[in-house]
Image (cartoon, rainbow, N blue to C red; front, side, top):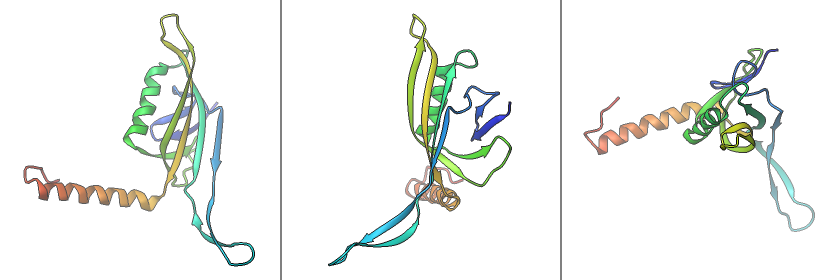
Length: 157
């Protein structure tokens, strides 16, 4: 059995804590503006593509990981706004990066003491286009420089 995919340093499938997804759905869309007219139906105008969305459902089980630890890693990736590349298990990479926008956990089984034995989760991913990645680092550099100008005690990098 091979690995299904990689999302940053998370492995989906065999050889890591995250099981292969129970489901993997994707949404691609276009933005269409509707211009109202006095008579008749509105006139549609294509305005470009929307960001791709992806939903992965999987589970953590104590038979192959510590569910609480792995869930904490996912929450940390969402909280930090980490942008992660998505690579198929075969090594195919189309340049797509995603951010975790939401996590929906379901505790399916616990011990009598309340320790999580099995946790399933669904994560929503939103595409981060490649031009936004370079823009993001430029904005960070400007913010650091501005902070150094305002506060001379801030070390310039």
